Image (cartoon, rainbow, N blue to C red):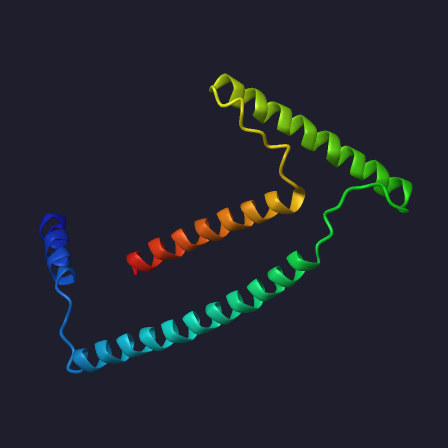
Length: 139
């Protein structure tokens, strides 16, 4: 048998998968295992999300974002001053961009630290919910 005849014959043999006697049973067992693993995975991820969310809410409620000068160490005061100056420069940059867009009357400095924190947290939660919805539609 020449190479020209051998290659097509091998390709034909491997193109057809042999039928097994228990194909339906095998398929049913694989489907069952996939569904079982999916339920366990969904439960575990949901439980982890609830625990993580609870920890995040607890920590957010206990967060002290006040950057006022207190009786702290010098390094803490320097860090607070650096954060304040960075925040001010970011606000000035954003305000300049808003002025160029014609939205100069919108002031970001009037909001407190906790208000900005909750706005950002709400935006992140909405983004996560949108991601979950998209993921659930794909499955």
